[in-house]
Length: 123
Image 1 (cartoon, rainbow, N blue to C red):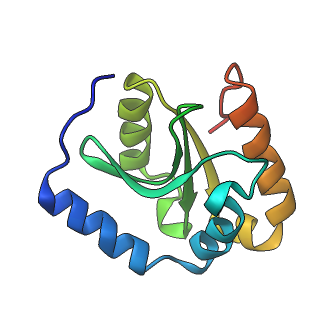
Image 2 (image 1 turned 180 degrees about the horizontal axis):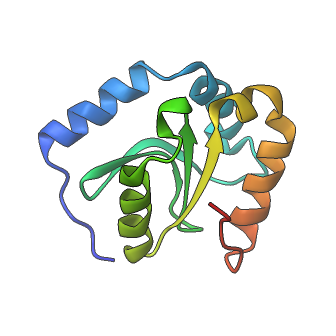
């Protein structure tokens, strides 16, 4: 996938999202930042096409999205996931409360998907 320039408005929006992370995003970022999670490099609030991914490991082409209750059954998320998959990414989704209650198992799952690119997300 060739690099596409990010419009300044999208870059500004991503910057705002980095400043205003949810509790679950903040908790997971503390584990992901600085290659703390099994030496895997993640970036947060990454503009990809028309979207901003919560967390992204470019090396593994893995996006990690955290969803609140407003995302339950959201058709928009299905469309977003399909478009990101079409760009070559695998999209791993967790519920916010899952991250807050089960951080260790969330991190174990992320490591498994980052290390084994043949694994495909279940939702």
